[in-house]
Image (cartoon, rainbow, N blue to C red; front, side):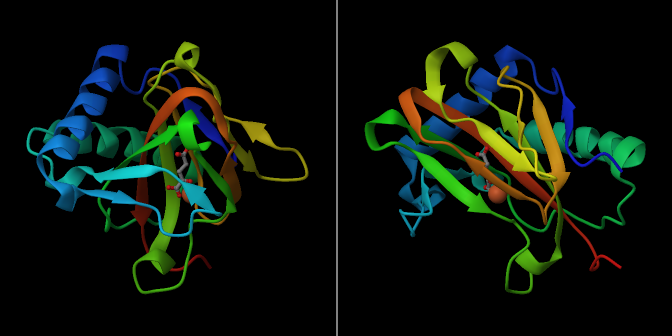
Length: 183
Ligand SMILES: O=C(O)CCC(=O)C(=O)O
Ligand SMILES: [Fe+2]
């Protein structure tokens, strides 16, 4: 099993822009769809849940394709569903947006079923500094490719973080695939 798998061009640059625009329109329209993370020491980012954004259905179709191929070719996990909405996050330099080391498998009935994490870079590498997604499959940290449209997939139990953004803003799309407990 390869622990960190990257898929270049999972979304085109134009599609990345469209997802960012969809999230921004939800932001302007409906505060219900928009959140801020609660523990600001662990994570500082603005969030939009895509499943309630009109016009974003195609995003989920693509996510399903990319996750299915990656799971078939690389992970071979027993996956059942996407039990949580995809989420678009914005990490801005104005408050050093970041996400400290954490694993995605959590407490609670849904988070406990997370098995595979996929993160897609939505912002071009040239528009921000910092904001590196790092995954720790072993003693060596793997830095995700920054090219917009690249998907980075890894088992949801691996520690990972986003380093503080120091210029501009980084946007990402995160989704989890769920299934029965690892055994
Ligand atoms: O934005 C990212 O690159 C990572 C997001 C993440 O780790 C999460 O939502 O659990
Ligand atoms: Fe995470």
